Length: 354
Ligand code: HEC
Ligand code: HEC
Image 1 (cartoon, rainbow, N blue to C red):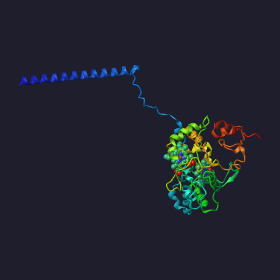
Image 2: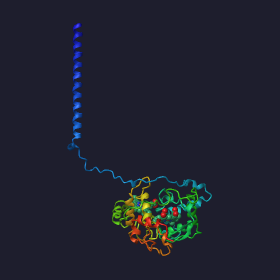
Image 3: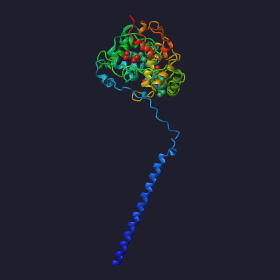
Image 4: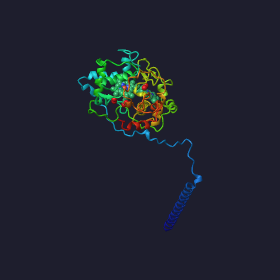
């Protein structure tokens, strides 16, 4: 009995000794591995090469909107509470489906190029940074340099019929124009008189230091626009041929040379926050440079021409990026079309000579 006890005690001690040995060996191995690793990292020759596929992230700060605060359009489901709900809804339809009513196969008349107002005034003029109408009711009637007159909402809407839709305007007393006006007033109803809420209209981008480049813009177009708007810029009609799935960017059915988008700053500011389709101020897909360059490319392509001889009666009122002279300054038409715009803007800041 005592023999057995002695034996099992020896066994026990032996097991402990082995265990300690194993642990010590393992610890030594771990320490050795750590030492080898440190030496390996600190020796410059042995640094692992970065795999070739690795592309460091492009830090372009212009892919983030500088200020994302904006005023939201009212909820359209509340239109039904308005006394003139039917009229407002009709106006919204006319903005969204303009071609159905007035396009080449228009139900009411054939007097526009087949585009819809909402091709440029996104989501029927309600999208933040999407050329929305939130500032219209609060700021019209207003004096505009282009016409040199005080313009009503009706006059301004017809401007887009005649230029952006390269067509004829509507009679101010027509049901359709009254409906468009009612909708535009409804969408801006909460904005105090005189105020231009953040995110309304088109957002100005910072001017580039260089001129916008047509060749670079062509590359942007090929990579990011052509798949929808087409090699020839003519866009793509819906199967019924009544309106566009992808509206044209140049050619006979596009906006004419008197339209807002024909100015580089308007085009660049529009596409920056809205194109390619699905882009928004929360999901910007073009750097500022890409937006300016693609604007230069698209606006160097052929498009319908309008008689602009009555525009800008006061030369000093012309915007820096109006591509046709004469001007109140000495910069060329070329620079007024493609930039750099900074130096032109500088001369405008100086007080006019008496
Ligand atoms: C090809 C693009 C395009 C189409 C299509 C278009 N517009 Fe416009 N619209 C513009 C641009 C660009 C401006 C100027 C926005 C700016 O400078 O902030 C503008 C401005 C306006 C404004 C003044 C907005 C403001 O805040 O001062 C109204 C109103 C307007 N459009 C109505 C219409 C109506 C109605 C239609 C359809 C018949 C239409 N637009 C179709 C591009 C377009
Ligand atoms: C996935 C398809 C798609 C791509 C890619 C795309 N667009 Fe568009 N684009 C559209 C659609 C659709 C509209 C009309 C939006 C609406 O009605 O809501 C539009 C409208 C426009 C308009 C205003 C209407 C007009 O025809 O003048 C311009 C300008 C424009 N896109 C420029 C561009 C540019 C520049 C690019 C490349 C950077 C681009 N788009 C890429 C689908 C696309």
